[in-house]
Image (cartoon, rainbow over all chains, first blue to last red; front, side, top):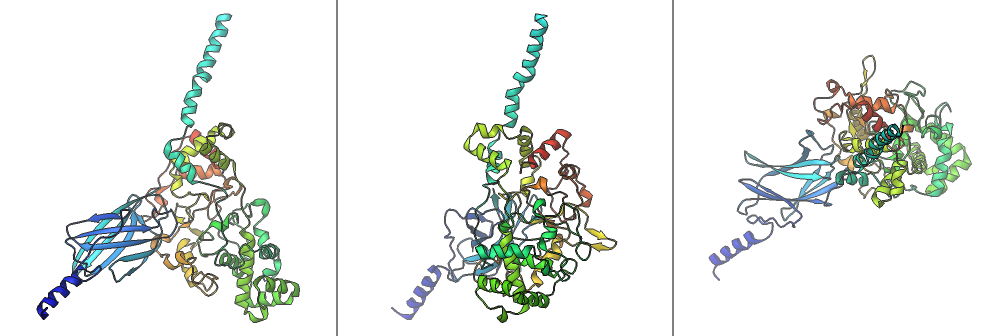
Length: 137
Length: 379
């Protein structure tokens, strides 16, 4: 195999590898909530699922550009109750794994009712916002 | 005559006989109401020892904590014991609006019942553990006004007490500095207070009966209380904040009770609570947490100071609420009927613009108010 072919195969290998610079795939299970807009698609899973009122929980979040490219920018997640116009009393912390999975800890929904996760993506000077509704019983 | 009697009987039948099915229909619970009812128990809720306190649940610590709870040597002038403001006959509260220690106090004394399930303590949540909360009045200048050095001296001078503390914690007090001894006292007091739990109430028995389909159990629960429950879970939306077996979310809210404590003096409520919590060496992120690797400090780690925390106060548990008058953080509302009136005629002008948007006057009529009070009395 000549050097040219090796480079091509290496690029294909990197692009296909989970969490690589070129591949982005929503692999979270069927219990994950999903949302998309013209630019991005995401899957968000709470741990535990379902969330318990007033008890801390964590989230797993995968977000990709439509077409499978990874996000090269900043992702912020918050949550609020739209009808009540208030957010959480807590500020979650986030980590991004090597596979691109974002984990957030320190979420607490302190009331039953409709909550809404807000995922804000900033790439360069472009800001995009996706929302995911969550009904807490 | 016979005709008149028949008419009376017919009238009675129409009033009572026909009314009964309608009344029963009014009192039957919808699926949603049953779900809410189920969520308000069981009682007592499941409990486990506090991981941040290594003597939580330890029999000897509970006994020693109970003795210290009544010991006035924990106050600077031997003027107050915990028991002096938290009377067992008053649900471990004091039944007056505002008490005083060395100075007048600005917050109503909270009951100490059922604290083992709480996550924040005090009206502003300035403590994140029961042992931290137990230290607070000891050091408060307005209350017991104790200094750690003096407390350590008093403990060490009582040989029998010192030996008992050493046995419970398996350490030598001589190796402990005054602040560490203060924390040990706080953890003993907390071990005792964890045992103060209210008994199952009339409402709990009603809940069990509904879930079990026990008609006999249902019949002994007051009909007015059933109607009150339906208001509580429905029109009143009370369960947005008063939820779960403890009948509280454990969080904080601004309901428009005045923050002023005197001329030019303001109680910042939760805002001050978060600030003092994060500045304290006794919080769960500090060196005295016996669960340093665990998750007990997660709320403290993530709690967020926000402008809307001004004027927010604890959402209290409603268990035994009919026995803990007066009400609100400043004890300014005398009776349960007054509390219901307060929410019925809520003054929206007094609510913060960035506060809870679902708070609205309930506009209850007299019968609804009576039903809601009847329900609250069964908790």
